[in-house]
Image (cartoon, rainbow, N blue to C red):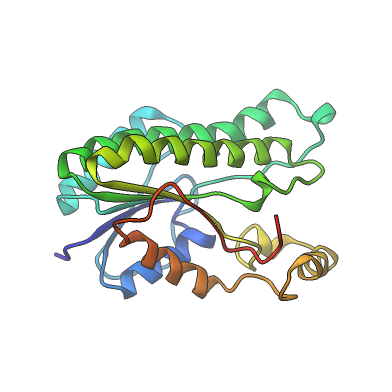
Length: 233
């Protein structure tokens, strides 16, 4: 069994999949959860289970089972997130609540349970995957933007509370990349993203995941928001 274990939510595809692969290559144990789509890949020293992070009982079982499997949690990555675009006037209550419940409430549930474990360990790292949408707002993204802005405020509050136990908490803005959500974007939107980028490019997913692995092991950096998006905010 490896000495380091990462718990990743939303592991079936997109950023979650790439993070799992990166941490596995770095020699970590991987414990991940998915809601609907079972991962179509396998990596060593890993276990993936089905769990809905908007259901508190599911989260409690997720954390309990990860401890049973690997004995400890070195890092938590709150990656699970959804988008459901609509203008405010046309947005029904379900669209609002589904995004807030997954992106923000689910993160609260998972963090709360993992924090209980890490507080006893007197160490650990929590990384929340936020978005440039918390700062740079787009038409039809009120629910998503609100959830990600709330996630950043949550991270800063968490860093103060968790820091008393030697636990770090940081947020990262992953930028636009061609996985999952990004792969469905139109060529026109992709060109707009590149024009707004100071480098005229999109995010390199390997650079991003390598940075997350690096950040997970830092002991004296906390309460920070790292922008991996070369669009200015």
